[in-house]
Image 1 (cartoon, one colour):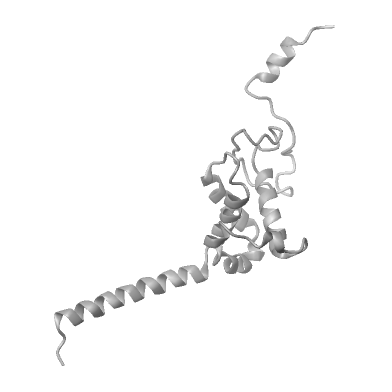
Image 2 (image 1 turned 120 degrees about the horizontal axis):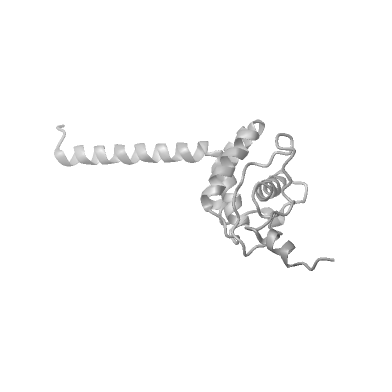
Amino acid sequence: MSLRRRRFLLIGAGSAVGLVTTLGVGRWYRGDPPSVIAAILERRLGYLQVDKASFARFAVDYVETRKEYQRELSLLAMLSLPYRYVTPYPWLKSGHSLRRLEDNVVSRYLLSTDFFAHGADEARPVAYIEFHDPYSIACRNPFAPRPDDGAAAHATADRPRT
């Protein structure tokens, strides 16, 4: 039995497809923990004017601070692609760990941005400042209003003096 050209090409193509499939399934199985965090943010905060790259930066920061949950996030990351579109959130009990994870990710992201500093205005673009960890950045108050480009100076000049 000789190896003909057609059989050689079929074996080569089959091997290439098998290798690519194995690598894809391995990547899918192992997962990338920041991808599930970004998927949660895209689905839950997609209506805001946010730079999508800030989701990826926040996801990396979140995973770095939550190293004790690395294994669970890796397992959950296998579902990051469908998790962008579908979630069991509405059907979960309020104390369920997956529901608590989603709530924690969304609230921590919003605290890490200037969203609350500008009065929670959904029409305004949201900018990611830094990862909000109340134990490491105790002096930063995300709820404190910020003056808008000199608007505070104009407001004091327009007030009548008494």
